[in-house]
Length: 71
Image (cartoon, rainbow, N blue to C red):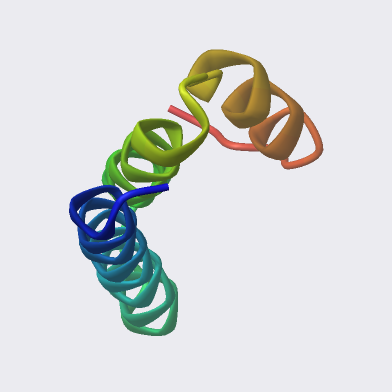
């Protein structure tokens, strides 16, 4: 792989990590599930930039299907 691909992947990984950090901070702060889900979506999007595949809806359905979230 060329170095520009490596740099692009490194940047996407950095952004994914930042989004996950935001989700963890939000979890600690008591943010609502919909706001946490947005940070998780962002992280998955950036990981999808690396893998070429983004499956946010499937992963989020699996994660939040295990929690009882009232409206």
